[in-house]
Amino acid sequence: MRLSFLSLGLFFSLSLFGQHRIAIFNVQTTAGSIAGLGQVSSQIVAHYASDDRFIVIDKANIQLIKDEQDRQKSEEFIDGYIVNQGKQEGFEYCYYPIYDKKEKLLSVKVYDIEKGTVISNQEVELGHTILGTPKNLQSAINKVIEKVNADCFEFRYEILRCTDKKMKSKAKNLLFAIGYNQRAKEKDTYEIYKLVVESVGGKEYERKEVIAMGEIDEIQDANFSILKVTKNGEAVMNALNANEQLYGALIR
Image (cartoon, rainbow, N blue to C red; front, side, top):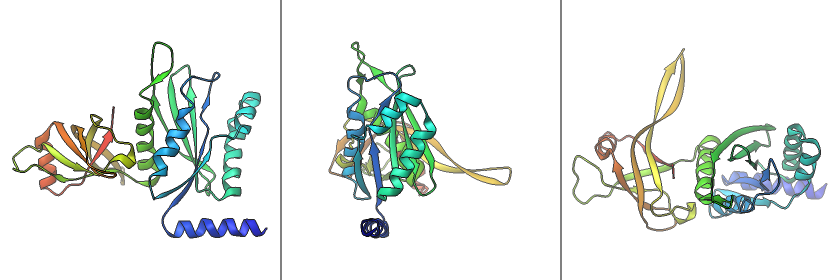
């Protein structure tokens, strides 16, 4: 019982400082093991380990889920096990990656332990080499994590300002709040978008409106890069001049 109280105390003290306690489970496949996919969970762990908003627990070596999944093919068992495990160990969220071999889709389910439900299920299609191993795996994982972060935590990669020395009608270079800590790479391509609110049937819904494209030209440090606008620089400049908040979303 003493250990339980200590765990709860740690959990609440971490929550007070705004950190999320997340657990990453090992990737499961729908039809046997796939060469190269063993990196999925470790790359998700690495992505969050450098972000001080998270406390990351690597649960990739737990074999019980896979054994039971092979026997029963029961999603209910998996869901219940993950939620119970999270409650016992004081997690807030658990990440469960799955690879569908037939559809070539990598998905990540995120469980909210307090609610006991899946609050996000994001997926991305994986390309493959001639040998059948996945390619551009890190880029695919980054895409999924961006979607999860926006979906679950409302974390988005902000565009801060135009860095052009001479301001013209078109923006060419932007200071972008993403860097080595977020696994950014030069030449990564991003959609530049803003959030707009639509009223439908008396309710308001937020949606993403893409206005331009860009690619990372230079990574400056752990948290900042220069994003070169490759399409619709005029729309970007108009939005910045109107003090609209812009964001970037990785597409490849």
